[in-house]
Image (cartoon, one colour):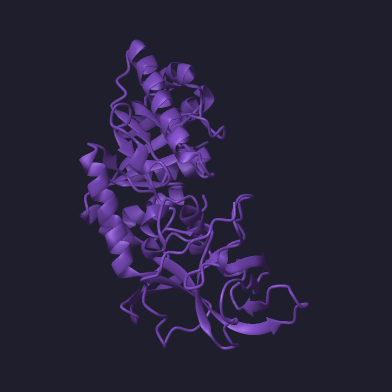
Length: 376
């Protein structure tokens, strides 16, 4: 896919006191994204449980909760510990944990102060979870993970009851089912993935009901599908990237340039000579160690330039981005600061200790990426 994006960027320029490379978060766009998703999901009669692995920042979590989020989704126990310490009282670890003694003790400590739910997708995993938690098992809810077409973790809908019985026998509270329609991250797939998500949740809920369980929670919704999810099968959605937007969402048509709240400030440090008739190239001081190296096969490059959407980032090294210049005019001169939209913001956020918070072209704050590196 080589989608042209011709929407005029409305974001403010890079503040003069920001050095490069640096992640910038435009707080005005961020707040608008948070409020818009909250209102859209509420209008559908769904709960919103944003995935905090995207931002990893307590200040952003507080904004999401203030806008009406029912709680947060996290990927790891470590992320749960960070957000529980920041005062979040309802957390779902959307992952089929296999509990070591160390992990079990951490879950027990979390459950003593915070409402904790955990994903399960096997009878053995459910049994190990209950055994590891011991007398604390009744204080932890589980959601059975369903494969709705992404074919990663999760069981088929008709297998949900066996996992639920294993969890119940282990002393755990079976609260419902969840799925991740991750195959929505491809051109032309969000609508189809949302439909498959709905059907999988419906079938799984019916399977649990027939086995005597109430699937009170039916959780789905990636950023590409969150606004396509309907309350007929789901009760909540768990988008994450929507707070920032990124180049993947831009090329999938799930956001516009004016919705991009996170960019990487970078400086042109070199021009590269090219043969006559070939596009000029230049080098930015932002490589894979701040942009992340994720590039789906359909993406037009390793990110996009916010203010020059026809340019293409054709290669990344650890500290270099090679940009191929297309369109009118000449390439920006050495020393020019540009804003890069990462392909996948979740990776970029895990590469820095803090971010520069900007508003109307001014640096207004710095936020610590408190859950960075909390991978277990």
